[in-house]
Image (cartoon, rainbow over all chains, first blue to last red; front, side):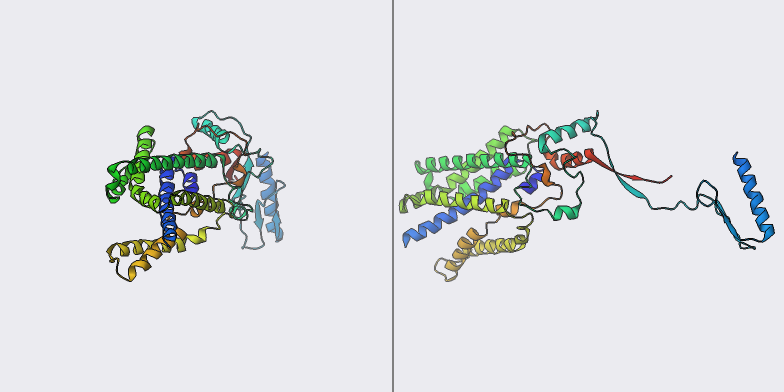
Length: 40
Length: 335
């Protein structure tokens, strides 16, 4: 993100969408892990 | 006067030839006008033949005079808006690449003020998107829309995402792009509603815990990338890219393997734990050293956010112009 900004890409919406995808993936995996632990 | 000197020189040469002497004649002005050796092997050389010298690169410092051109005003705006660098007398005006590689300190020290402002904007937009997704999930859980297969809103979310990726703020309005971002996050929240409802049925505390853990992971990864040395995370790029390929293959394999197969828990575990350990686009990799980022351009933390007088799209160009405004590398040729 920072490197892209320094190379001239200053679209904060695009960078926020990238981070949102990462956040959603990590969140869903953590949620599955916690649900599996609750089942045990 | 020159004619008299030439005549006197010719006379002296003629007298030397007559005397059979070997000598070299140098005019008082410096440089050998001609050399003579005894006998027939005498060669004349002009004073222009001894001028093959190396081209000298002179680093000449120019005074910071205000320029009247449009580009000059952009340079000044870039200096005011982006860097607010200290004066050229206290900092080196030209940094060699080797010096830049030997810089000490963390990547946090190399952040510019414009970069910090951009990160604030990005993380604020991310928080807004998470809020929109949470609201959409709550709305979906409270309505019969939760019965919709999550693949449908997931695929529908790709449409505004592609619209966001294939537009930019110079060709489309900011309002439309914000709407695309909101649509993407909202549809993503709708797609996560069945999972969240199931998790809330298992335990009501699972969702806040997962939210906290995810936020902590994000903060930890961002802090690690910020406090690492410049370029320290670049070596992770190839292993993480390989891990991403493995994750993609595991995800594709899990789609076609039956649940009763022995491969299913293996692929599921690889996708779950591997995806948690190596997110496809880790923030640690988002910061790579840029050769155009001098460390002295970072503004103090108390400085206000810059007003985008110059489009940040030209951030690298503006920094280059800032350096070139202080010092100009000129190649002079000896006449």
